[in-house]
Image (cartoon, rainbow, N blue to C red; front, top):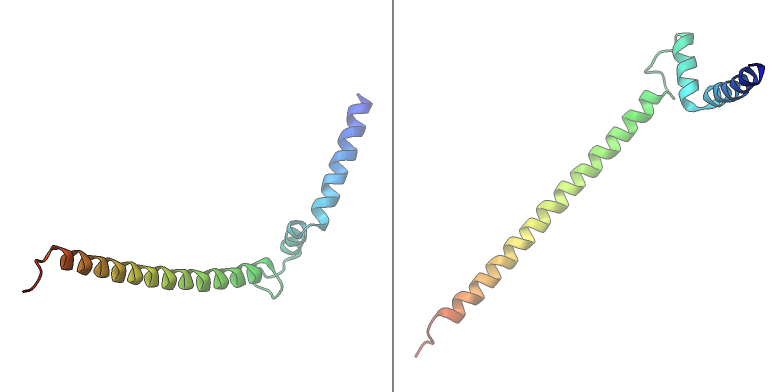
Length: 92
Protein backbone atom coordinates (compact mmCIF):
# COMPACT_ATOMS: atom_id res chain seq x y z
CA UNK A 1 0.00 0.00 0.00
CA UNK A 2 2.87 2.36 0.78
CA UNK A 3 4.30 1.72 -2.69
CA UNK A 4 1.11 2.92 -4.36
CA UNK A 5 1.01 5.98 -2.11
CA UNK A 6 4.64 6.81 -2.96
CA UNK A 7 3.95 6.51 -6.70
CA UNK A 8 0.89 8.76 -6.40
CA UNK A 9 2.90 11.41 -4.53
CA UNK A 10 5.78 11.28 -7.02
CA UNK A 11 3.67 11.50 -10.17
CA UNK A 12 1.07 13.81 -8.60
CA UNK A 13 3.76 16.16 -7.31
CA UNK A 14 5.54 16.16 -10.66
CA UNK A 15 2.29 16.89 -12.48
CA UNK A 16 1.45 19.75 -10.13
CA UNK A 17 4.93 21.21 -10.56
CA UNK A 18 4.65 21.10 -14.37
CA UNK A 19 1.19 22.68 -14.17
CA UNK A 20 2.55 25.44 -11.93
CA UNK A 21 5.26 26.47 -14.40
CA UNK A 22 3.04 26.23 -17.48
CA UNK A 23 1.15 29.23 -18.94
CA UNK A 24 -2.10 27.67 -17.77
CA UNK A 25 -0.78 27.39 -14.23
CA UNK A 26 0.39 31.00 -14.33
CA UNK A 27 -3.04 32.13 -15.53
CA UNK A 28 -4.72 30.18 -12.73
CA UNK A 29 -2.34 31.72 -10.20
CA UNK A 30 -3.06 35.22 -11.54
CA UNK A 31 -6.80 34.56 -11.28
CA UNK A 32 -6.40 33.34 -7.67
CA UNK A 33 -4.36 36.45 -6.78
CA UNK A 34 -7.24 38.56 -8.08
CA UNK A 35 -5.55 39.90 -11.18
CA UNK A 36 -7.67 41.49 -13.84
CA UNK A 37 -8.36 39.16 -16.77
CA UNK A 38 -7.85 42.06 -19.22
CA UNK A 39 -4.51 43.19 -17.78
CA UNK A 40 -1.65 43.63 -20.27
CA UNK A 41 0.31 40.47 -20.92
CA UNK A 42 -2.55 38.15 -20.03
CA UNK A 43 -4.09 35.39 -22.06
CA UNK A 44 -6.94 37.74 -23.04
CA UNK A 45 -4.52 40.12 -24.73
CA UNK A 46 -2.89 37.27 -26.63
CA UNK A 47 -6.29 35.97 -27.76
CA UNK A 48 -7.35 39.43 -28.90
CA UNK A 49 -4.19 39.73 -31.00
CA UNK A 50 -4.82 36.30 -32.49
CA UNK A 51 -8.44 37.27 -33.23
CA UNK A 52 -7.35 40.39 -35.12
CA UNK A 53 -4.78 38.39 -37.08
CA UNK A 54 -7.37 35.79 -38.03
CA UNK A 55 -9.88 38.45 -39.11
CA UNK A 56 -7.27 40.06 -41.35
CA UNK A 57 -6.41 36.71 -42.89
CA UNK A 58 -10.10 35.91 -43.39
CA UNK A 59 -10.62 39.21 -45.21
CA UNK A 60 -7.64 38.43 -47.47
CA UNK A 61 -9.02 34.96 -48.21
CA UNK A 62 -12.42 36.41 -49.11
CA UNK A 63 -10.73 38.88 -51.45
CA UNK A 64 -8.76 36.04 -53.08
CA UNK A 65 -11.89 33.90 -53.51
CA UNK A 66 -13.76 36.80 -55.13
CA UNK A 67 -10.85 37.41 -57.48
CA UNK A 68 -10.75 33.73 -58.45
CA UNK A 69 -14.50 33.82 -59.07
CA UNK A 70 -14.06 36.75 -61.44
CA UNK A 71 -11.33 34.87 -63.29
CA UNK A 72 -13.57 31.81 -63.66
CA UNK A 73 -16.41 34.00 -64.98
CA UNK A 74 -14.06 35.60 -67.51
CA UNK A 75 -12.81 32.19 -68.65
CA UNK A 76 -16.37 30.88 -69.01
CA UNK A 77 -17.34 33.91 -71.13
CA UNK A 78 -14.30 33.43 -73.37
CA UNK A 79 -15.10 29.73 -73.88
CA UNK A 80 -18.76 30.54 -74.58
CA UNK A 81 -17.77 33.10 -77.24
CA UNK A 82 -15.48 30.58 -78.86
CA UNK A 83 -18.21 27.94 -78.96
CA UNK A 84 -20.70 30.44 -80.42
CA UNK A 85 -18.21 31.39 -83.12
CA UNK A 86 -17.77 27.71 -84.04
CA UNK A 87 -21.56 27.16 -84.25
CA UNK A 88 -22.30 30.10 -86.55
CA UNK A 89 -22.19 29.40 -90.26
CA UNK A 90 -19.36 31.08 -92.12
CA UNK A 91 -20.10 34.54 -93.47
CA UNK A 92 -20.15 34.76 -97.32
